[in-house]
Image (cartoon, rainbow, N blue to C red; front, side, top):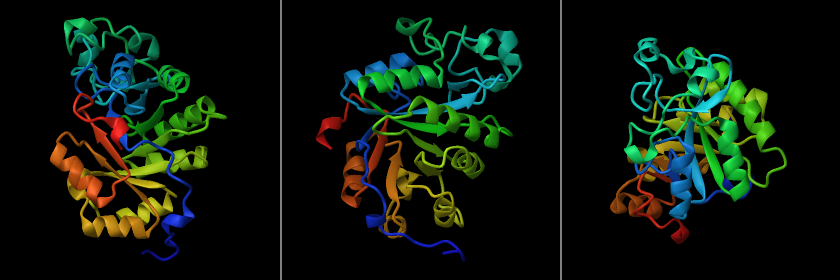
Length: 264
């Protein structure tokens, strides 16, 4: 542990309010990711918690998209794609894009949703949400601040707040400063030096790891610090069984058609 960072125990943390099974980007790959259509499909399969990626438009509107560019998940005109960065465009432009037909003809015309749209869907249906703060490069602090401010407003008075996560500590730090009461989790694709100290400094309640990073040692480290454990992206039964045996608290999956979330 770094100086000034005090370990906590699991008993110091509030009860874990979230379901174990979390639908990745709404419904994984069965519908166009990060759209309301995907959330509806995930809910039809029994999922009660969803993960999504949120970034900012040029005029500061939080909206759902994973990639930095429009090319993969929209049918944006060539002139927009040539500009490269999705966040360089105002919401008035982004809101008109087709975010469904790249996936299949059945979803042609599906729009990009705002965080407000997704919040309304989740709150009306009693669903939980994991918001991954996904900044346009160079916009880490601004994105963390704005997303946290919107989430705090949208979920004000809700029984269960959204879990804010990010690979970018600067984004989480900005979210912490803006809305300290909202729960946070540090996303990791490697166990880089200082990951545990960073999670504790950011007052995270969870660490969300690439599933391969969880083993007896990493589980013990995180648990001893009072952190909850989540894993992504788990699409095989054997992997889910291994993680369940390790005591992982949350499993993020594309396979909403394979796993029965009511089972655990």
